[in-house]
Length: 257
Image (cartoon, rainbow, N blue to C red; front, side, top):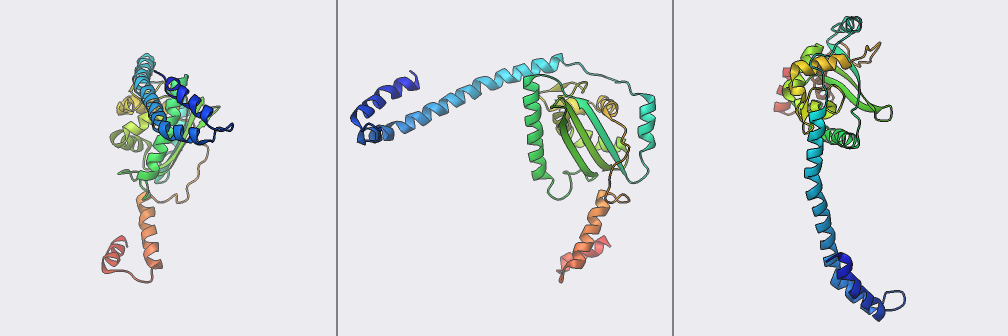
């Protein structure tokens, strides 16, 4: 029995018994009787749609993932690699610029964009103290879809070497990396968007280096300082601006000197 079957006859009777505008006592009485069945029917319909579509989407996604091609050891142009490495490790900070091609398809595009939106919302909640969880090396990171969403661009400023930067993410946040980059061509094989992928450290680092472009210039507000040093100097300056400090605050401030 459909919603039309349930509502059709009572509504017809209501309009017959009410005014020409449908606002008479008959209409009001039937509306009061039928609002809950209507809400229940809508809820059941939405629940059924989600319950049946999620398994189908998961099977479709897994089928696509198993068909994906990837590079175990993608080639890197030696000349481009020399250009990149010559610009690294001059100061405590380094820079990474990457542009990769996004895998085609409606499902890929929808899940990829939803994943980036969700990842951004999570980071806004987690990274509220200037640090990215237990990783204290990232000064700046930005993802952007370009070329009508066909390419993903990534820029980041970070402390220490490029290898140590990626090792930190591989060990502590490979799920986030897989979600952020997993729908790009050549990425190590993934499972259900967040599994495997970047956890294959050697393959991921080779793919990441292959995806990089030479950055002719980049900006750093505090080029001689690491993230920890910048935070330490900020705490010292904040203590100097306060008119009074408690004993524990004064002890903590003195330890930063």
